Image (cartoon, rainbow, N blue to C red; front, side, top):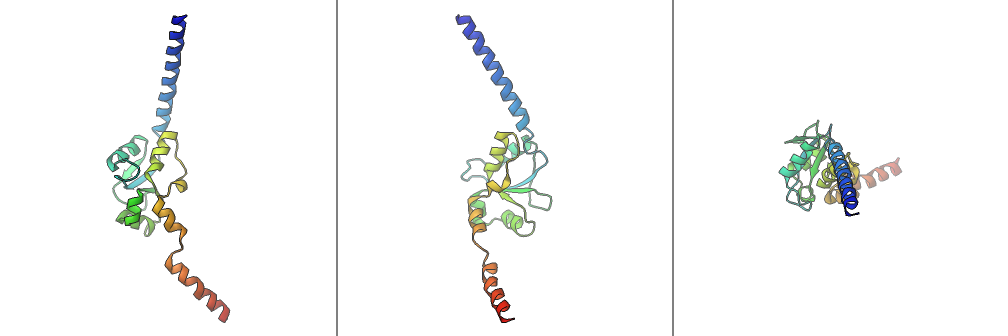
Length: 150
């Protein structure tokens, strides 16, 4: 009876290892086709920038040293967004590149496929998007006044 239990445990372990290797194989391409720039590390995610870059490459993604027109996403920590780093400014302004937290990379790799970037906006970026820009807020009343005058 003990031998049967041991054999069952070995078979279960073997099946678990096969499933794990299958998950690893699929997650190795989770970020395939994406080019990501980084402005993260040493923040709430607990993942350093070098480690994040290594994980992105291992998952089939490309890491860019700068934000440019071919970058699909900027991975930025809440700290980088709050400090409005150069990468964040370029992503928001010149290139209109979506910004995601490091959790996007971690979760995409764990799931074995790309997650929805809209769900991973850094917390400081979410607050900025919720508040209307000063120019738009001040322009609305002027447009309303001009429409009334006509």
